[in-house]
Length: 122
Image (cartoon, rainbow, N blue to C red; front, side, top):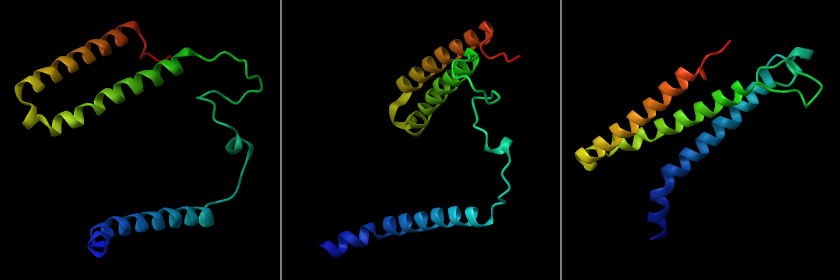
């Protein structure tokens, strides 16, 4: 019985070993063949689109956070569409109408954010 059990999981283990081997191989290739010419600009920390600065108490523009939150919200709402699309044949008309209501509310929220100017960038 254990031999059959191992035969069933052999493709999964093979896939994992190949993925691990390719990942490590690509990292090693990148390390070996990448150009190594650092300069201060390349070594500076990336601070949300701002130039690097010394004072950590500098005020950040709230638009960076607003755009990030809006991206996360809309990205997660779109993630609800994939399971819905797969199970559309089994959930029927009620599921279809429910998703239309969900998308309508999402569209209303998007229009509200657009009209408030949250997506405008100067």
